[in-house]
Length: 258
Image 1: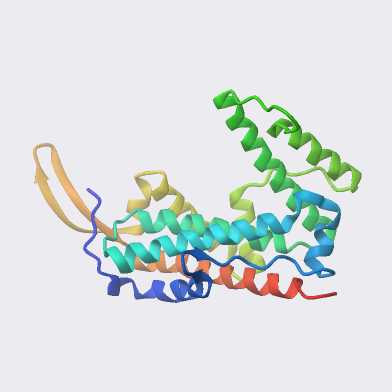
Image 2 (image 1 turned 180 degrees about the vertical axis):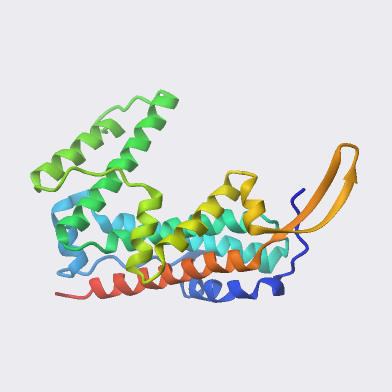
């Protein structure tokens, strides 16, 4: 049995992450990262990518991370109902979001950053195509299907003499972003695995990142009361904060005029 007796004060280690999101909260909406300034490094990266610009993905990924963190903030501070799975699920999403933003912002040179942007757009359109097939969506008029968009993206990559587009994997993106932000990539990957286990309702994370606080006898055994392992969740929260801050800093630096 999964349960929790925690109060908001018991998870004070989450407050620095919540505070980092506060400047983006506005009345009824969240502020996004600004659009790239003309002649900035970001704008120069995106110039030949047209409507497949990397900054669109950076900004939407970063915003999604903010939404996940704020949802956890409201769960902790407003409702006070903290279960053993939801914090992991929300921070897992935030970690992937902030890591993606960092990954897109980094890279050894402009060609690698453009390749990463187009690779992620290619995956985005692959997923779109899958959904279109599932619902038997037929594109009409001047629109293009996900499959057609993928062809467009791959043709653009070839025209720019970019390397073949890799298939972006969450684990690899997280490792690369963690290294870029000065974190231990193996430790961050381990936290992500635990969070993913909770998100998918697996059993093993309870053995690695939860604490048993009691047991209730039943006809066929026991129901075990579980609470969050604070040390493990704190590691994940700190990784999220570090990636958020690194994405902010890199975006600001690369949004300056070159």
